[in-house]
Length: 596
Ligand code: NOJ
Image (tube, rainbow, N blue to C red; front, top):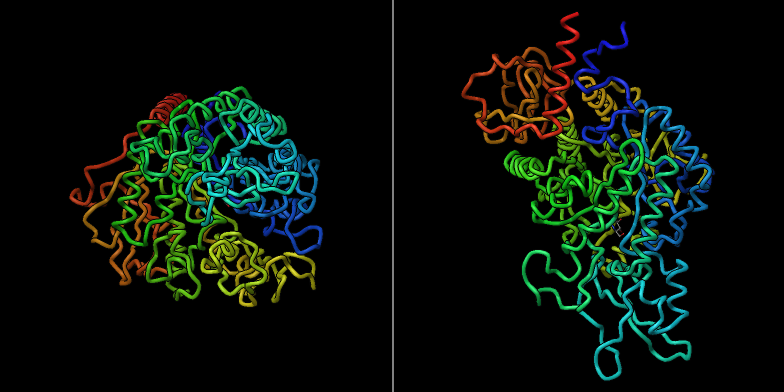
């Protein structure tokens, strides 16, 4: 074949094998979240590590992902699972070494898999040298200016400076003790006291983080996931929440000054060859304020938590999808689709409950769940999100259909969300249990036989191991593999427009991608008749050829004409600027090919 002739795959901007040269890779990427502590243990100490991830690169390749995102892998006292970073330029000794991280980045890239790392700019560990220096230097020192040290209120300074509430419940201020033993200043921490907040008005803080970005970009990382991205800037007047009103006026969240920070980060990312992406962890309820972070000179994408938190159901999903697509279009950014992560209840468990919405403050022990319904819905949701426009995140273990582990021995729970709630909130460790790889009893190949893993695995996971699922064509693992394979192969999927199909009933969510692909989700409990189609490409439940069972999704190959015109919705998402360009280029290339 002549080198100037594009295959259909190239012309359409799609590919059947991962490419590490496509500058727009992130717009359609499938990104797998590695919670390294629980992925695979190479050293045999019961905790996952880089050696374990390297040993399972073939698994990630077979799954077909474009990139992995690692939760923090830095040296850390682990007061919050590594989100208390002691040194941003090294690797936690339990996870391996910097040299191993560098080797991983290159080995993964050779397989077409990019590496995204977590950066944690809002706070650092109280053991970080900056904070230790600030404590030692005392009140009024330049070292303290990098943080939010403040005298207390009241006659003796023993009242907290503000009543801001921590995301982990409780106060956001901790009092220091002076060298002579007297009570000293207070410092701010939006999470635990072991995670002091940095002062982003300080030039050292800004400079240091730009240097950290360069440190990792120089080592070949393809992007960063930005932790607590909407919290960095605080109102220096320290008002109480609600004292100043209006958009951007909250004392600690989503302040307008944040955008300058991300513009400068984008300039750093854009100074590198290849696309280095900025992905925001942004919990901001107002969708337009959310997408403001995705303007062309700021972040590339941000996690779409609105969809993640939605209850199961066609109407709630459709509302979220429509709002998401509409809000992303004007800024030209693709949306992301995320069903779960290391902070939230596993989908299989959540979707099997009576209340299927997710909210941190609702988490309790002992909420009943129906594992069968939950599993059916989780599989259906996986196909739904894989068919939506934009990029897709998969949290490790979701591809195995792992449930939340809700009966961890209380004394083993490490998550501060649990103990800071006085034991009421079960915390997040139930979704962080080590993966089951093989065998019929713990540690299921995660660690060498006989090793005690850092969190215990349920004995029932024998049926959910990678080994067991590889042998079962109907397994959730094989469903994910097939969905990702088709997503890569079908030019219509990933970034691009979506057109709703209406009139199939209130429990049905259905849409087209391009001229021959349709996704139909039955969120009700009863089977419905499948719409006309030429072929079933993939389904989350066994089909009888006529019906789509309750709580399931089918991907159909269907010519546009097969469908009654009344069933087509008037609304469709407009192609984004990039999509328009991509399609123009693809069209021109196809024409060139046809002329030959
Ligand atoms: C969000 C992270 O996902 C979570 O795990 C962490 O506890 C907080 N940010 C604080 O860093």
